[in-house]
Length: 172
Image (cartoon, rainbow, N blue to C red):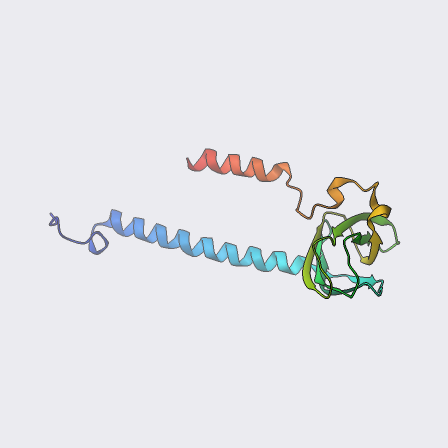
């Protein structure tokens, strides 16, 4: 029999050794799957081309624009000029290969002051996007825009909730 002061991880019993091996296998598989899922998701994104309409009041640069079949993102920088941008917004139109408009997203430029630089990120959930167009519009032009065109978060679907419930059912 072992002494009370013995370390549990030096124990020579097969049960303890098996538990340690199972824990190590689980940790290894967790990191292995996590890394490969990350690499796979990055491989799904392809670059998309865009057109930026330049104006005197604001300079828009696009650093990165990528899309999968069902969603994507556009990252870049907004540089305001000498004019105030409180009544302006950025409009992102997303198109397919056949120039069909799949949807529009907006960014309000109200919090950008004169001669200020700000990074932006636009996410979208439109299928089969091939290219995009960025333009600066007045807020009066977008009065009829829906509220979801201003939100940049990815829409959750039911599969996440169902997957979570199944995992909790089997592991709790």
